[in-house]
Image 1: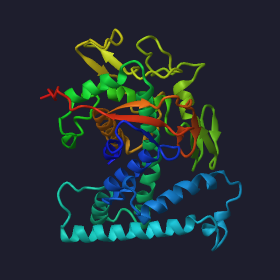
Image 2: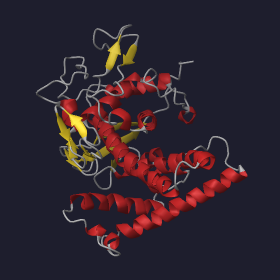
Image 3: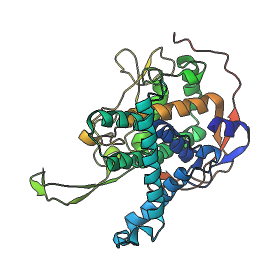
Image 4: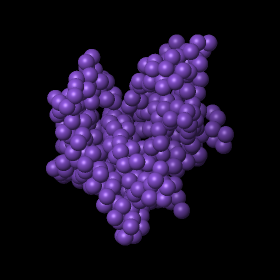
Length: 379
């Protein structure tokens, strides 16, 4: 659908409406709904889905509640409805409950087709076997996956497209060449294995650096539910902890120990889309675009210098899905279009909403590519 939007206005300036990148936010909403619920919101196509509108209402209202010093929503009876979020939340919970009922009926009748596994299908199946989750917990998780995946995917895709559109080092063409050689001619046939870092190292290196340098959530608020020993002292139960995730990955005073230097010695405080690329049998010797073998240094899962997906036992469960879906989306766009910032584009900075996003509307020219003459040779 995103490709169709670009193709319908080929060679023209497509403006995201308004900042942040609304098309990518709609994409993230739609893909999350398909994978999580088996529902097609089609917000990218302008659908009038009530569920999608209610989720957007929650997204818009949550930052306001987070910054409000007085928790007015706790006022008995009327508090939840003063800002309209109560109505949206109630409708959404009722809708999620109906989706659970429909999935339970499908499971009982064994009418779900093969290959249509979704988050809700798997949870309902497990719950029918051992009743480990109550309905409220399932509904809460169904709603949470939108908050966890939509803003973060949108922010990451905006940063990647911005990087490619303003790059002057031939990065876009290097990734394009990699894609047409490594992935099937029909991208509908792409598998998770095709999207692995060993198959598309240049694209994945770019993704890792965007996640590190422009991490969607540069900070996170934590809360201790028990006493925790910490650096010779004890954090009391109920302590609020404001963790500066991105500062650890970009600390200008103490270099992050697990962040490699760029091919020209670029430190961790500088954005470098080829930072995680390796060449040669042992990955030594820097990056040579003409080298026969290029690989990517995959950040360690629990590295304290790569915290985009969290750390420890609460690391993001959707990490693999997020990386695969973003990689496939970028591969589709790069294979279909060349991307360039519009002439005389305003400088692009960053602002913090729920996630970090560009501070101006990104204006990108999507120009359709000719059909590639070089086809996949990976087999």
